[in-house]
Length: 451
Image 1 (spheres, rainbow, N blue to C red):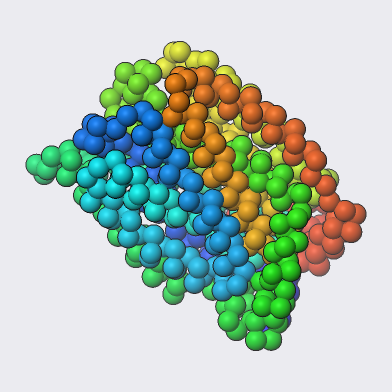
Image 2 (tube, rainbow, N blue to C red):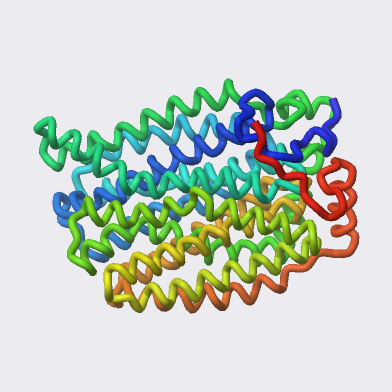
């Protein structure tokens, strides 16, 4: 069995639920969506956890850091694992095992036990790498940026929906007569069950590549992706490629900040504008809801720029989106009116998520033989950025000052992305692949959203 570029989909057919490519497309974003429920389900309920466990600001800062720190190492590991065993089994393991700490966090009775469960839950964040890997091997160069951005964006949408839905689930249990202490614990069981069931669905509903599963492919094509003969060598090549680390920095400056906002937004609006937890959760949820289309825009523009100006065009678009994010975050940090704060937050969210889509419109072209390693390292950059930002929120400075400092750092990080370069040979290779797949005609993409 030989896997060729022709096996990859050259368009996204949203209402096609039968082809391997589109089944993967839909199941990856749904799985990632549910992972956000497990990962950040507790965030909008932290007001009640803080009260019950008598948490200090420093302890909350430590919990925020814990929720994203372990994900750095898990994303590195899961990227390598995808290269070795394929995304299907890797996702199944992560979903089923990750559901355990989500359901068990309700057993916490102190700051330390809560911190440890929050740390364990952070492993679920590695799901992003599998999502990006799986769509990267299923879609052709003309559409891969859009596919990656849409599956990740719709998955990230879970971060916004979680902010809105978890307080409702919490309220359901309080309406049944349970105390607030029992209600937040019972509420977290719901996303845990959903994750476990999704793990089973993913195993039976997807395949590793358009041509089959890794275990079958490696028998006749051992150098495909992370085949045993070349995995370590290619991983080392990825580790020494400066472009990977520049993308690591870029993703830390966008997804890392999104994770930080997911963790802190509800508390920020409660403390800064004296809102109720329910109202603050709804407003905080608006930030995540932009993923419905914003990240897709970032990937789609990346593809458009790539078709017109090559791989360099993708990099220039990443710079522009990231610079816009930095400027908008600086504006948000200065807002003292609730209306202006919400408005600037939504604009900031648009650029954050476009930057994420733009980043992963570049990632698939760095090293095709170790795509999982590249996706894992860059994805880990998002969590490294979140950990770095988290330290600002555990100190004595105000949340507004922290946002201002982060905005300046993001703007500087945007400039560094312009150092990403591709050789003429790499440009020609991608151009040739796009011509072979028939995905580009007269410089125009064949992107359609058909049924």
